[in-house]
Length: 220
Image (cartoon, rainbow, N blue to C red; front, top):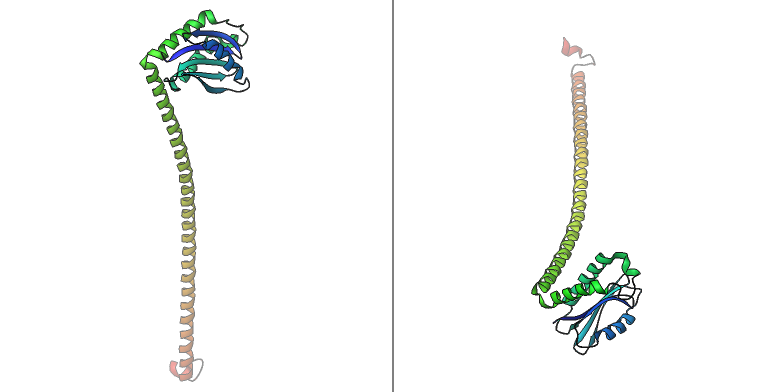
């Protein structure tokens, strides 16, 4: 049998317990309760011979069990998590003011049932393994989401850069168009000037050949 003993306590005040252990587990458990600091939540394990004492303290409420050393840690701590949830759901705030063994008559039966389930039912370990796998999947999903968000930030930066490049391209095209227009007008002006200059040269030559500005000999 994997789990042999269990208790629920507020500080060092035992509220419920159940024992199938051949050893004096209750006395050792009380010594362990004294060792666990009240000010912090914790998960701890202590060994004695071939038995392991596992304890979980949350919000001043301690759930403790004794398991043989072949049980590992997964099943005992899954049991403690289950018992803690059942106890809080059943008694709520009453567990903060209840006297010693105030819930023992009722809750010791639940301890007995869950000890038997986690010790003998193969589905218990299967469920714990599934929960562990689901937790791993959730962690992977969170990690993947973080990567997607990070990649999204990189995509946003890329979009910003692309938009900036597009803006620069539009400005460059406008500047190129203005430059082409400017060159075209300069060419037109230069052509007009050249035509005028050629006309002036032709006129000067004709005036010289025709003996005067009015071109008298050429017009007659």
